Every structure is written in structure tokens, then in C-alpha cells.
Amino acid sequence: MGAGGLTYAFYAAAAYISGHIANTGWLFILAGAILGFGAGWLWTAQGALILAYAPQDRKGHYIAVFWVIFNLGGFVGGILQLALNFDTETDTASPASYFVFIAVMIMGSVAAFLLLRDPSKIVLENGSRAVIVPLKGVKEEFNGAASVTLDKNMLMLLILFFGSNYFYTYVFNGVNGVLFTVRTRGLNSALYWLAQMVGAWTCGLLLDYPRRTLRARGVMGFWFVFISFNIVYALGCYLQYGYRGGYDRYTNIVADADRIDLTDTTYWYPCIVIILYGFGDSVIQIYTYWILGTLSAANATLAARYTGFYKAVECIGATSSFIVDLPELRVAYTTQFWICWGIFLISMPTTWLVTRKIGTKSVEVSLDGDVVSSAVR
Image (cartoon, rainbow, N blue to C red; front, side, top):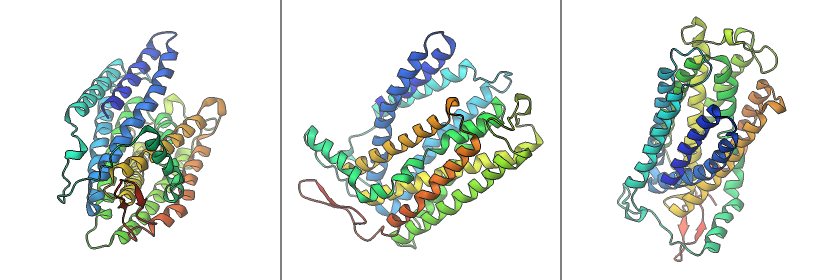
């Protein structure tokens, strides 16, 4: 986790250097590639920890606590962006913004190196220990990780994984980056991550509701995600097409003089939409992690494999949305909006097939450490 965190600091430093020193664009590209590896290390380890350490009836709480802490960083970052750029007249962040973020990233990485304990020494809330399967040879471990790609539950959740971060490019480039002044973007970012904290806590409480069975909680969570996300995108549809006559990338372009500022009386509606985009983002993430945690139970090895697969597919989705947004492809923001909503709707039927079977069987681990059945097979 610590090594993965340091790649974020390197990426931020490279972004600053490439933007201020000529002929250094190669460094930014290199940093992006390194960040890809680092993010994989960081988020696979993180996902395995929160899924393996949480008791079955408290997984929603554990995941929500992580998500609140995780998004607290984004919230503070948005506030810093607002404060550091409050009086700027340019459309770019100040140098101080980069340096502050780099320092925070380095501090977090060092803390991971110093504070994380060996999972084998962790006692769970219910007094038991996480299932730590002994490491085997490189070939066996690789085959075990690769076998997840053929797991029927992972295949049915594939579209959900793909779309779980796909909408980030649209929200931050096609909405926040186009409609608002630079200081208002900072405020919007803070509100987006704050809404994620609220959404995560709400969804976590629902998924741990003590008066319902595991299966009933899964069903409630599914419909909560489905209804919440569709409401969010219905409001986003009006922002894209109806608010102030609508806007797009190549038609009805928002001029610099027409960008919305936090002092404008018309700011309230797009502000609400940004907040709800954050809320919808969090409920999808929490529910996805909850499903994976339920499938893997307390098996740290299986949790790591599931999380690694989830994050790999998620990154493919995020990369795809970034490519779609490239100016060379000239994909309109309206088109990107419908792609985001469409991926979510397409993912729901197969997600439901997994959800409705949750709770029918628990994970079993054989004596030699091999996983022989998953929670819904």
C-alpha cells in the first residue's frame, strides 16, 4: 500500500513539471504508466483488508468507514483547491496546489509503511482471525489469481465493475470542468466527496440492517442503488439538455464568461446535481464491495483476488472513458452522458442474478487452503 501511494505523489509531481518545463511531456506519460501499477497494488491491498477483516453482519459498516475516510481526503483536497485558487483569474490551479497535494500523498504513504500490521496478527471483531491462506509458488499463485476471471459470479458482475468508475471522466471533465469557474470547481469537488461520505454511510447502514437476513439486505441494497442512480441521472439529464438551454462540447459551447461561479444565483441546481453524482458514485462502490465481501467471507486470499479482478476491470472502464473523451475522437458530452447511464442500466440484470442468490451458501476452504466454493454457488 505504501509503495502504491508513492506513485500518486510521483504522478502529481510529473504533472506539475510537464506543465511548467518544456519538453518534459514524456515524464508525465511515464508517471501515468507507473501510477497504473501503483494504483493496482494500493487498491488490491486495501480491498483485501477491508473485506477480510469485516464480520459478515458488519461488512457494510467497515466498507462505509473506509469510504468515509477515503473521501475525506478528496473533500479536504477540494477545500484546499478552493482556498488556494479563490482569487485566481486564470483557469489553472496554482503551484501551491500541487505542492500541498504531493506532501499529503507522501505523508499517507509513509504512514502505510509504518502503521499497517501483519494480517496474521489481526483479531477480528468477533474474536476470530481472518483466513490467511499460505502462499504457494509463483505459478500456483498466478493460476489462482487467473482462475477468478472464470468465476461465474465475477463474469456476471463484469459490466458493473467496468462502469463503476467510467462516469468519472464525464462528471469531472464534461460537467465540472466545463460549466464552472476554477474556484467553484474546488467547491464542487469538496461537495462531491462529502456527498460520497453521506452516501457511503447511508448504504452501509442499509446493508447491515439487523432485522433482515443477508439475502434481504442484498436485495434492499440492490434496489437502493438502482433507484438512487437513476434519479441522479434523470436530474443530470436536465442539466445536460435543459438547464439554461443545455450545453455540449461542440454545440451550445459554454464560453469562459458564462461559466457558473459559486456567487451566481443560478448555481444551486448544478450544485445539487454535482452533490447527487457523488452520492450515486458512493452507493455503487459500497454495494460492489459488499457483494465481493459477502462472496469471499473472511478469506483474505479470495478477497484479494476478487478485489484485484474488480479493480483491473474498473481501470479498463476508466481508461476507456478517458479515451472516449479525447479531443481527437470528438465525442459529444451528450453522447458520453448516455454511455454512462447505459452501462449502468445494462449491468443491473446480471448484478441482480448474483444478488438474489446471496446467502444461500458460505465460503468453504479446504485443508490445503484452496477455495472450493463461493457464497452463492
